[in-house]
Every structure is written in C-alpha cells, then in structure tokens.
Length: 391
Ligand SMILES: Nc1nc2c(ncn2[C@@H]2O[C@H](COP(=O)(O)OP(=O)(O)OP(=O)(O)O)[C@@H](O)[C@H]2O)c(=O)[nH]1
Ligand SMILES: [Mg+2]
Image (cartoon, rainbow, N blue to C red; front, side, top):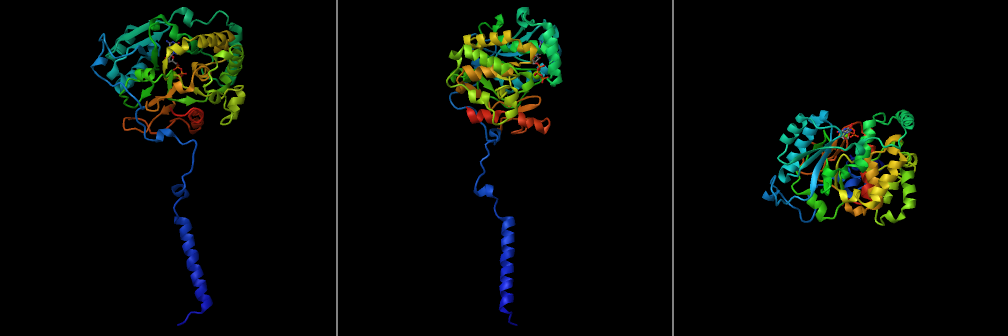
C-alpha cells in the first residue's frame, strides 16, 4: 500500500527530530571537546613529585650523632606545653616516620616553664636525633611594659564581640608575639640558621626523601609553606595601617620583586580587604614553616617587628605571627624565594595540604578541609598562584 507523500514527509521529519533529540542527550560534553579553563583548579589534584634539581638523599652521613654529618645548621622547632605531650608525640611520630628518621635533624623544644621529666623522657624516646629543651627567658615572654592593662581589657571585650577566638587568653597574645619576633633570638638558636616549625597534633602524610633544609639552602629559599589562608579581619584591623606607616618611614625596605599584589588583593574577597583596611588578609599558615632565620634577623624585619610591638596590636588586637611573618615576607623578600612545599602532606585542624602522590597516605587528595564546607573559601592559595606561581 502506497503511503501518501505528506505522510511520508511527516514520518521523515519525526525520525529526524527523534535523532536530533537523542543527539542532544548523548552528545559528548563540551568539556571533552573544549576544556573549560578553571582558574581555581586545584594543583594538588595534579600528579606531584619531588622538586626539580639536585636533592640530597638519606645516607650514612645523616646518621645520628656523627661529627662530620651532612646535616646543615637546622633544627625542628616546637613551642609546646607539658600538658600537650600526647599531641606532640603524635606530631613527632608522623614527622619522624615520613622524614626525620632518614635525616636525624635535632629537635628543639621551647616552653615558658621548665619541661617535665615525663615530657623529656617521652619526646627523647620518639626520635634517634638529639633533643634540646629550652626555657624562654622572661624578657622574651612577658607582656612588655608599654602595654596598658586597662586598654588591653577593653580591647579584649571588643575582640570578643567580634568573635575573635582566644582573644581573652593572654598566653595566646604572648605566644603570637614570641613567634613573631622572639623565637629566633633565643640563645639556644644563636648558631642555627634554618628551622622547621612543628605544633602538637599536626599530621604529616607523605614520605619525603630529600633533605628539605639543604633544598632551601641550595635553591636560595627563605621561606617554605604548605597552607595559605585568609585571616579574620577583626583580629588585625590596624595591622596594615601600621605597616603602611612603617613603610612610609622605610621605603628602602620594599623589595622590587615582592608579593605586594598578593598582600593587597581586593578582588577575590573585597570585604576582607575593606575590613582589614587594605590588606587582603592572605597569609602563610605559620604552624608549618620551614625557613631561614637570617630573614627574621635582618635589620628590615627587626625594625618592622619593633614598630609593630610598640604599636601594641599583639595585645590590643590579636595580631598573629602568621600575618606578621607573611606581610614582612611579601614586602621585604623576593617572592621567588618563597616556596610552596606542595609535596609535603600536612594537616593542622581543620585544613590540609594533600598532594596527588603515591608517597602520601592517610589524607584525601586535594581535600582542603574536613570541617564545614564554608571553610573552603578561606583558601588563599589561588591568589598566591595567580600573583606568584607555584615555585
Ligand atoms: N609553652 C607554651 N606553649 C604555648 C603557649 N600557648 C601556645 N603554645 C604553643 O604554641 C603553639 C600554637 O598554639 P595553639 O594554641 O595551637 O594556637 P593555634 O594553632 O592558633 O590554635 P588551635 O587552632 O587551637 O591549634 C602550639 O604549639 C602550642 O603548644 C603557652 O602559653 N606556653
Ligand atoms: Mg595549633
């Protein structure tokens, strides 16, 4: 039976439409044919290996206690309380397992009160390396004479209204000031150049098979970080204005190849920049630091720290050593002497640096936080990569 031509045409049209419909559903996604450019893509998802160049590996020259060792002038460094012994042991076990049992760099522990025998015994047993236990001199720890207690108490109230954590703990203010401008002045470190800062309860996830201190030295690096964050602007409202005052008096300290754009970015989180009066609040999270103390011992940093110390913000606000260190590095140092240790898997609650590497165990590749999802916006690494890169 012949089908009328209009009916045939309708049938063909229906088949064509059906094919078009199926194509729309099953066509290859545009991202396959044309990759989307995501400026925030996480480099921790890319396969990560060791840094390039000559690396010094474990050998008998790194055996503990030998006189002609390959170790350079460096120490693992922890400010810690006696009662944090369990958290300290856990952090030590992680770092010894992943790195230090191969290199045996000494540990130096600092405390504002004497270490207990239990603390010394248990921490010494956690490493083959030498352990030093140091008391902080009073003049490095006590609140300076020019801090007015009435102003401090009033300031704490304001900080608390702004929900600034630990604002009412004077020991926290002392700790931040000591980490900002005192630790490297301790006589026990007089002959030490590099340090790796370790806090109780932190985690290390990845095997690291080269001497990171020699890496710093060989590559002319001043500072190494893993995590890069935004700060709470209400903890540092006058830090940047004080910094600008200092810089007006000392324009000679500004490095021509510094990281000013990272310090002053107002595009990504304009409210942070506004509330911090011109500072992006981006900083290296200083509970992890691998650094050369020559920078802190420089005239530029000493003058800057003294200016900030006199301004009182370690007490009247809650200036942390993280933004203070970071601003100084961003202003006075060549940004290419600051290294992202992308290969060191690290966690201090609630943030991670977790690279994509078979050397890493126990963290989720690329995960930035295991806290609430809003914490993800605290990540300032995209700005560091944008303005400085991944070196
Ligand atoms: N000896 C001593 N160590 C301290 C004192 N306050 C803080 N610390 C140490 O300083 C480091 C930083 O203190 P934390 O309380 O961890 O500060 P935080 O990392 O900002 O806070 P959390 O997020 O709670 O870890 C840790 O290694 C502490 O053990 C103190 O009064 N005395
Ligand atoms: Mg901590």
